[in-house]
Amino acid sequence: MADAAPRARLSRERVLAAAVALADAEGIGALSMRRLGVALGVEAMSLYNHVGGKSDLLDGMVDAVFAEAEVPAGPDWRAALRARAVAVREALARHPWAIGLMESRTTPGAATLRHHDAVLGVLRGAGFSVALTAHAYALLDSYVYGFAVQEASLPFSTGEQAAAVARTIFAGMPEGAYPHLTELAVEHVLRPGYDFAEEFAFGLDLLLDGLERARNA
Image (tube, rainbow, N blue to C red):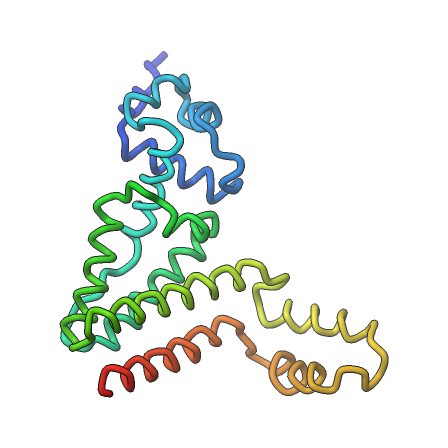
């Protein structure tokens, strides 16, 4: 009988990847050193050779998510920041547990710092003052993270599901009681091809338009 394949050597990268996968599958509440050890097939104590503890583990997981998001570059600041916002939102859609953690770490990793520095560099390179750069960064991040929270909280993920939810809600309402909600549902949500995700691009372009006017002023 052939020997079993040797177990992959434990490393910080492997520990973080397993932690991210566990949080993706079961939520951040399911993550513990003991549970992570089980997922990796090792004793929990052996994990401390690669991460300093739960806080260090979360730092590394957040850094891994930032590493997935495109770092803005290029001479077109609007295109760079638009691509960055889209990339961060897509990363948060893959890892919804990270939404509340992205800006919470007091010991951020290299990918996190590199990402933030690149965004600030794009804004400063486009002629934004230091103060306006701070305002723009806060505004864009508030929009991206806020949209991610709202998107993750919705009781539907497709246009068909949205239509079904809308019909269920309106079925229990008195006729004519909420005309504006009815109008929005009939004229927008219940239309074929409705996709809530498209609202992200609309709002993002409005923000970028406003920031461009502020910069030019």
